Length: 260
Length: 277
Image 1 (cartoon, each protein chain N blue to C red):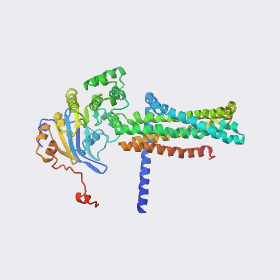
Image 2: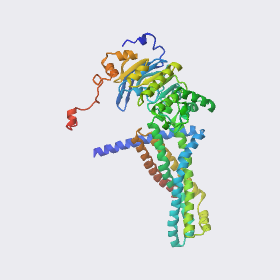
Image 3: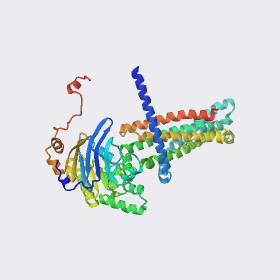
Image 4: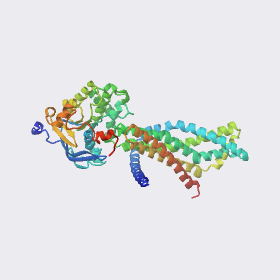
């Protein structure tokens, strides 16, 4: 029993210590991001690596998610003769929840893990140390551009996912079930609010993007410089950021739509 | 040990002075009063058994680690002890060749050597191209300019890293195990390059190695580290001919001597019978 309490205490101390390190890292990363802003070419390179290369998985996933929503939504709505609201249902699900959350989870799996592995390997092969010895601050040259690119890419990817998902819902509603195209689009136009729905969705995706790049860069930078260490760091990135996204989504949803 | 080098003013105006350095890492005592002096524009070789803290000294000198106590002076000023502009300013006077070369794997050979120029200077791209070509020519790899590091052999990667290390004409170059994993020809080329850079450019070189033959072939002065202190020092010839048991054991690669082969452990028989203390 005493051992259990001791272990719990040890885990608690270790957790708080790591959290403190992560916050200090975040401050350094934000400083690096600020100083890297004038270096547009570095940010564009990272936008390509983080954003453009993640687009394929986001677009495919978004299309299928929208199609599934169309199928499920139509089969439920038709029972209440409310199939004309299919466009609204699909759009609200995507813009408020599934777009930001699923895009962030996929972003964590695709771009977050790649960021951690890349930074971790740069550390393992002493590339970061070499930069330091060349009087180049890795926070500005390596971490900063990736941080900025992640913050820019994530809301765009979430918007793409929502947009392609709406198209997927339309393909099923109109193409498979013969729902009138005008009804599908107009219900969406009438029911989706720019501030309540779209803006809140964008805020969510920015917060999730912030979480993913913070976790991914921190885990990579603080990875144990061995093959096993980088592997563990990559796993931690996906697990931690996924949990943080889902927990954060509940908090944000409660704040935005829960009447608080 | 009596040093003919010391008598002839060899150590006047040294570039590095380590005074009574104490340093521990993860509860392991690495240095317990390390004192050494690196003469200017000479090749100083630091040798010692694996784990004696040779590379750690380079990390301390580069300001990547901080000593627990003691004084470390580079170019008449203490090595800054935290990330600050003074530390980055000091590093501009240094170059380092890492053990695994540490080339940036997403950049070509040209871009790797151009990296210090692009990051540290405002030189126009046309001039950078000329300078990089000159540096690559010095290490005999001008023809590899457009290749990625993954397309080069181990020896070539190290030469590219050397070209990058000397890009901004530093006052001091640190070589961390420059001969490890190289074939005899590549070793010979690296040895020749270190000597040429030292003689032609007047660069001070600190070479950390456990390769006795290669180290002694280029050394103007040798330090042997063991047990957290300088166990022996002198010219290569003095070290090779030393009769001091610790130095003799290391320089001749003898299994028996003051430096133990086994890592400290419990009694062997007790271990074999599975009894833990």
